[in-house]
Length: 249
Image (tube, rainbow, N blue to C red; front, side):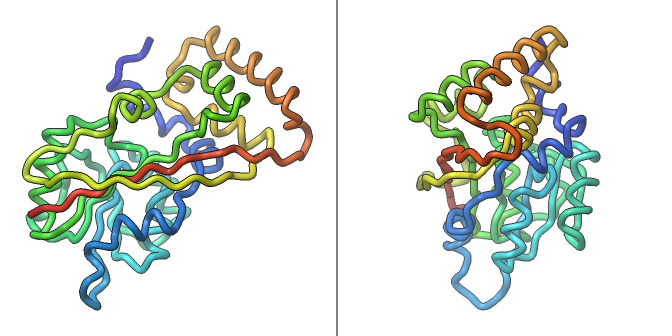
C-alpha cells in the first residue's frame, strides 16, 4: 500500500479525471468562508492551498476574490491554468507557503487540510494572514445516509478526509482561534462516466495495485448497473459540504 506522502502527491497522474469527477463547491459555502473579511470595499486577497485543478479557485474568483493558487503538484497546476486562466500559481505546501508575511485576508484549503501537518500549517497560515484574516477549510463528502452511496464508499475504501471528519473534524492550532463550522446538503447530477472519473480521482485508487483497482472497478460496475447509471442516464449523488473557518486574532 502507498504511504500517506505518496498518496498526497498522486493526484497529478489523474488530473483530468479529478477535474471532471470531483464536485464544485456551493457558492454559499465559499462566501461563508470569506464573510469575515468582507468588511471593506477592497477585494479580499486569498491563497487557495492544495488548489489542485482549481475546483475551489473557480468559485473564489467568481466571488470576486483576488486569488493565488498553490499546490505541491505541477501537473495539477498546469490543469488549473487551463481551466482558470490568469490566476497566479506557485508550487508549495501548506507547511511552506511561497508567500510574504501578513499579506492575505484568507488562506483556504479545499479537500486538502487532511494532507498537512496541522500544527505546522496553522503556524504558516498565521504567518501569511493579516490580523483578523481567516483560515478556511472545506470538504465535499458523499452523504452515506443513502444506501447505495454507503455501498459505493465501502467498495472504494475510506479516505483520509472521511476518517478525519468522522473522528471529530480538523485540528487547527495556534496562532489561529477556535473554528466555526457549517454544513450544506445538496445533490450532484452524475452519469456513469462522471461517477467513474470521481472514483478514479481518489488517491487510494490511483496508488492501488492493479488487482485491487480491477476488483474495485468490477464491483462498482455491478453497483452502477443496479442503480440505473447506464448509457447517459443521470443519477443524483447526494453530498454534504462541510466548512470550517478560524480567524487570526
